[in-house]
Length: 158
Image 1 (cartoon, rainbow, N blue to C red):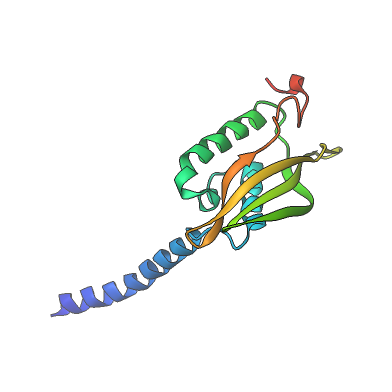
Image 2 (image 1 turned 90 degrees about the vertical axis):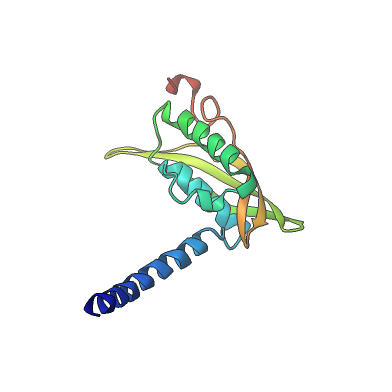
């Protein structure tokens, strides 16, 4: 009897965190509220080099392909003098294509800083196709200028 009471009490205590975790995972899997929000997350993850949180903004059917592309591009960044951050400059342009699709263009530049120097690269257009997928906006395609030779001089990449 005591054992079954303990089991019921423990199940109740565990049930709340489990249901909370399931609800939070469902929220994460929904994508973003707008096309520009999905692109912002993509650029922030590229800046940090962290994949955690990236999957929520990659279209499900193209997830693996987009993740490989993201990793290749991040690898290009890491071949050279890695910037302190990447950031968007000015407003992000969202062009509605209808049928839950939008083309997004963000001007992105690299910023390097240390104790004495703050250097900003030229802002260049990064273009994305986004789609509403499973209730939220996600990146369907990404087109970024080459890192080595465009964002940074070729000789800075090893």
